[in-house]
Length: 344
Image (cartoon, rainbow, N blue to C red; front, top):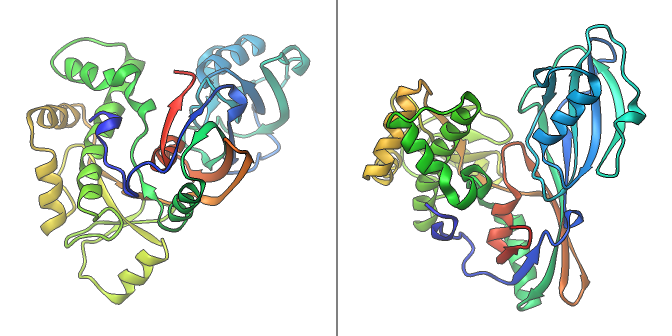
């Protein structure tokens, strides 16, 4: 499904605006998942970069350190059109760090360096902190503030963002071609498998948003613990489940497709199967199963933390929030209004 086809949970857009007019309008800072050990063969670098994606920064750091790119680790991918802070690890077995000043440039600066015992693995972060600036904002200000309050109170659908699907959403078509026999590079294969999985998840979530069950759960629901990948259920509805759902301790979940049976049951399972029964979905399902991926789950609901906003001028709105790893700031923006990406 294209982004335009995904239903919104909070109703019609409350405003229109432009963002990413400059990298400073989209600021992202990783929230570290651990502290450096203080010793070991891996140099942890906290860097700030402007207009540079993670892969390009990793390549530059590898050149600076005189190592292969495989010696560089990072926890998450960050967009090019942003001002970002994130950590990289550099494997230096001789424990001799090159001159840090040689890495400094107008678009990349080192904020901190520490020694650590292990390579920084993907996903090893607690989340990301965003500060976003919207410009040329049009619409009713009271309606926009009310929408922000609703997002803070109820959260938003936890869609995979457009970044997962490549330019013009082409990664899903590429995944179908790969499943049909087209050969691809190893790194591209991983990207296309993720896009196929994300497409199926978004389809299920779109169905749940359309019927209003994305935040309330159904008979046969599989529940996911907040801030965790742990799941439980199905189990009979109870006052305890209702209280945990209301306090965001648990969330309804949807399938990340792979081999094996769906864990959901009853109404929840019927909805998941019905939403993934067309020809395209069946081909994606079969390809993911053949590729050896296993059934997993992802929360259907996402609530931004520490959400605050400030009108910088009549038509400039700045707001900030925190999201867990794997969540997308663009899905929060989408629930607020029609936001045009000036960097596209």
